[in-house]
Amino acid sequence: MPTSLYVIAGELSGDAHGAGLLRVLRQSCPDLRIGGAGGPQMREIAGMELRDWVEDSAVMGLWEVLKHYRWFQEQFRQMLEEIAVLQPQVLLLIDYPGFNLRFAKAVKEKHPSVKIVYYISPQVWAWNRGRIPKMARMLDEMMCLFPFEQEIFASAGLRTTFVGHPLVDELEAERVSQERDGKLLGLFPGSREREVSRLFPVMLDAAEKLLSGDASLRFSAPAASAKLAVLMREQVRSRGLGDAVEVTDGGSLALMQRATCGVIASGTATLEAAYFGLPYVLIYKVAWPTYWLGKMLVKIDFIGLVNILAGNAVVKELIQSDAEAPGIVAELRRLLVRGEERERMIASLRETAALLGGPGAHERAAEVVGEWLRGERKISVSAIANPPTLV
Image (cartoon, rainbow, N blue to C red; front, side, top):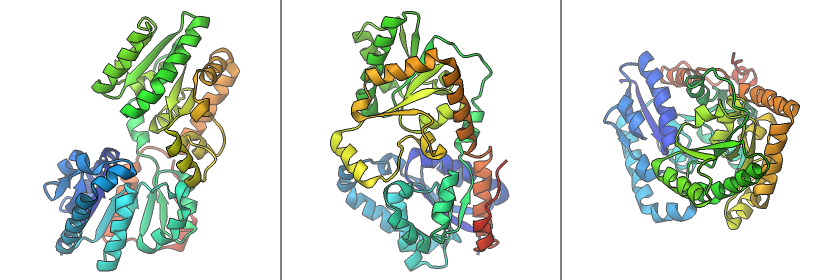
């Protein structure tokens, strides 16, 4: 029987990471047959047997999921039929836990010979650790991006490999050699319209207060899309801040290497800033019902990925009512004025970023999948207890 793989990614980020893995896997297994569902990048590598569904599947929030419930049911049914036809050696699930964990359970029941490998572990360690033993019963291996996740999943009896974060390869390709501008501050309000609408006005409030004390300061705010750029420029124009605040079309990674400090919405950008050694203050603000629900469900000490990874408060987190101009201004002034404290934060950010592993995450993940496809990978207690060291 020809070697075959079925893979599912439900969001654009998963599509990008999945494409990186599949690209490497194709080199070692050129005749591999790949089916499943993902996005345009994965389909370009896998071919027509992999459908592009992310434009419809990447819905957020309980209400949106309920509205699309019947559509998801139909996708679920079709995918199970495709598994029955393709008879893959491996089912590769990429992030997207709401759908993928349910699908893993169904495949384990109907097709127990299929090996199920998960890439980009769900953050159940933050919101529902009770699911981990269930995951251990239906998955054959978990591939983690963060080192602390390995012990959490392995302790439940699930074979777990820390492959490192694929972000490292992407960021290293964007690294430039340049001096920082001591008068330039970065404003990073997020990539979603709701985030920008809620957080960018607060960032502009802080910019106004900082400018009142030092008119020589300048601010740059990269917009994640053309639509957001229009929204952000209108806010800057309405406040008369056009001479001091520049809104750019993208360019966030370049700005992180040029600015002296910044303020960043919670998310992947906080890891990117850490990698480039940009001192910053993190802000997080959502609707209060969402916040209180999250507070009841999430059982971790920090919101920011950098602080979670480090296990301590490397950067200041300003959450909900604290995410206002006074707190932001106080922290940015501290970073601007106190050079020794700024340098200490830079050193801590770099130490934390090093925990993401070295370049080659996709290669390490592809090797794990390749071994399962070839029948070479066996459950090994010693492999779990003694994970490979990344250099």
